[in-house]
Image (cartoon, rainbow, N blue to C red; front, top):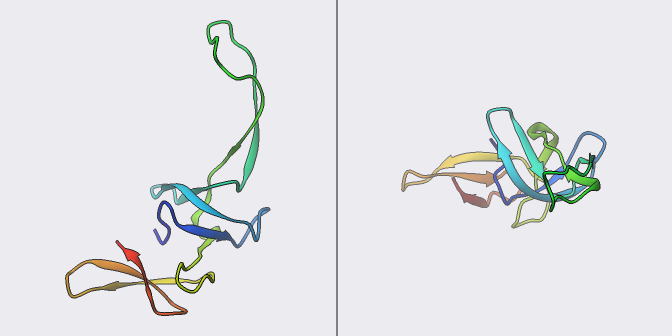
Length: 107
C-alpha cells in the first residue's frame, strides 16, 4: 500500500473530492483506507432494553474509501504527490516523494 496509518491524504475521486484528512486505519487485503471526516454515513441507532448505556439517535461515522481514490500529501513540500519506494544502504525500504525527492518515512 502506498498509504499508511497517520498519513495526511487528499481525496482525488468520488463524492468528497478535494477533502483532506488523516488516515485512521488501513485495510490492505481489501485495498481500502479509513480517512477522518471523509465519506461520512448516517447510522440510525434505536434503544434496546438490554443495552442501557447505548447512545441512541442518528449517528455519523466514517466509512472506508478505496485506496486508489486518495493521494498522499507530502509533509516536506505540502503538496499531493505520488510516491516511489527506495532501498537504503541499511537495507530498509522507504517511501520517496516524486516531486521533492525527499524521504517521506521509513517502511
